[in-house]
Length: 202
Image 1 (cartoon, rainbow, N blue to C red):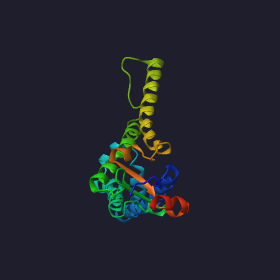
Image 2 (cartoon, rainbow, N blue to C red):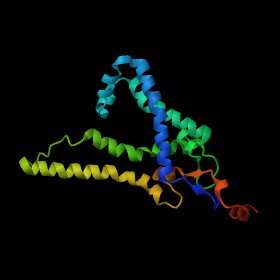
Image 3 (spheres, one colour):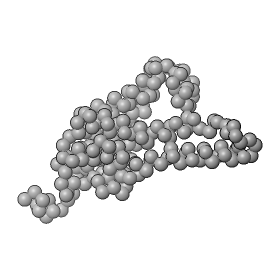
Image 4 (tube, rainbow, N blue to C red):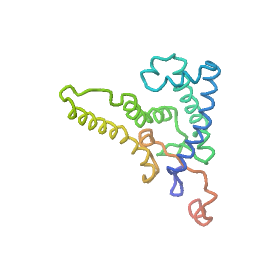
């Protein structure tokens, strides 16, 4: 239930939760890699520097890098309304309008909304500045290339403002939260003054 006493999880708490999640997901993925590829793991990882190389790699590699972590996260969201990292920090993802547990359509939409942040940056890092400006040559061409590269990186980084928005948003929502109509709340009512709790629940 969303109430005036509801406390929303801020950027630092959610960032710490994300770090915890990365620490448990990474060993699982690496363990699966090692189980399938054995001592060839180092060579395979060194070949996954760009999206093109990833697309040319085996589907099993793609499955372990992208699909399995997504399934883990979606399952935890559906079962516990939080990932292990969020559970550790007493956080729960709920519907922003009612405070009820999030439904599967919201869960899926919330996860897909993360691509707003990831895709532009990934595309720029993968594509880089490997192009030529045919209309310009020499120094002018290099300057034009540098300018276009800079613009590309700026537009790739801009969506990250959607994550930073958690810092100043009234309900601590990022763009993915607003798209899916979710909020991340903290279960720490016991830390509130008794007089404040009594006033609300009376």
